[in-house]
Length: 318
Image (cartoon, rainbow, N blue to C red; front, top):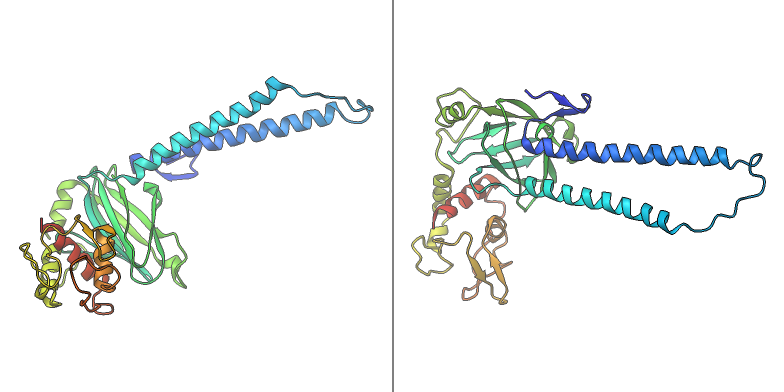
């Protein structure tokens, strides 16, 4: 486990991102303290030098152009450095590598539920491999939540009806606390969890069910995309949407994910997680050009876990 940083005031740095965030934080803190002391020092010095008994007649001070340029240029340069540095750190935090292992997270009052590609789901415990990029795709089942892992320096809101994401690469095996950083009701402070970082080999053993862990998946570890396929059959989706590219009542599922569709109002939209969810819950909101608005809503019938599984299935239909 990494040691606490900045005189023990900051949590351990458990990811490379944490180091970048802390370096920027320490730089901004140092600059702020330096200029605070400089301004206070100059203020006290001038108050003493120009006090009434030593300077009974106020000195007529005229402008000093070089000084004015200097005190404008230096803060501008410092702010420019902070902006560029902050943008680089933000970009590194926001753009997950394409090879990142995806896990879906659902915030609920008052717990975190995680769904894995092999079909397992865990509550309150997030299992991830060490030294490998992991992308968490977030949504909420009720109100606004926020997944915060201080040791990783990552935080992202889980918004009802939307999908957001964060990513990290944990340095070493260990455990790290998860908080909800957005007030979400009476038990907000108790909405805790933990990240369990494993060696890659151990993680693969956990995925295969060889390690004892608190994972459930409706009895067996049915892969998430297979669960999604079963759900499209259960809810009758395949009666109107083909999986082989042929046109039926609705657009074919084959090659649908990631495709740019033209809507009935001639606007265009990329078929992503948010669009698929909206099409299930509010099917009349965005109708594809050439198709009639005949699909019924599945609001109240389909759970967030089900939508995640259906999305995973559609991603496989290339």
